Length: 427
Image (cartoon, rainbow, N blue to C red; front, side, top):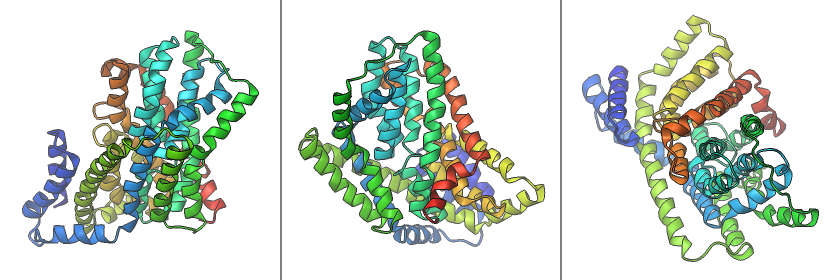
């Protein structure tokens, strides 16, 4: 049955079918053609049972709405201004500011595509106007947008917490240092290329103006802290924290910054519903798909086989990262979590790998797919903003791609880069 399941899935995805439908139809096909025991009625039963008890997933539409509110509230402008204060004097300042702003905005939106659209819409034209190569500007923007799914709060890490049944607060805490390291690794090629091409520094505001800029951005910057702190200290559940933060963001955007307009609300709601329904469809079919994997005992068999090979934890992590990188070239990270994590996570735990460490290595490996052809969503968004050809941007992407791989390898080799914060808060 499991052979039929994966063969059908591969055929449907290669043929261009939507991931949600590919998951659902391959699950049905596996039961019809690969099992003499199971009935098709089992599939909807398992889907409904899984979704019904998955209450933390109710936070997903809240996080999506939060990102949209801050995008329409023009929070990115303020984050860019803050980053300019600290990095404006460095060669290639606008590129570095782009990356640092993505780190802050990613911690608010939790979405790579939202980051690309919000930051890229401002920074790509600004960098080109300032003398930066268009393809370089696009690459800096799309690679730094990968910080969104890593820096909490994040829809991707929320899905990982759901699949692995790990505490959401611990998963969120585990993302800060890997996100920071990825930011530093992306700054390195940006800085080196900027020096080589003699890209300009940027003007920094005087001290008093800088203080005003920072104070003005504080209400936006504390948004992710509100979410994570309230969950970690047990003040709220993930759903309550997300709802409170949406209300807070509306107040800040409407009454403090006064950038969000009443006419923007229907657009925000429409986008939230569209994205939530798309994710919900994938979750529903993936829950049935995952149950079939568990029923077939594939995770147990894989764990047994890996034990027989006597793989070291580091080698297993590297192999897993390569699998995620490969899958990320044609499947979005959320779908990868639902398809691959139920297989690889139990095997990792059986080898003695810390579950939080494995989850963050997995997340970082998956999000690289956001910028790689043929399916990288951020690659398409960035090219649509800059007008560059995808194949040309893909060539310019190479040094940044290698830097991202370096960040993944560093995190694999040094588990405390992930575990220090969760341990500090008692996880």
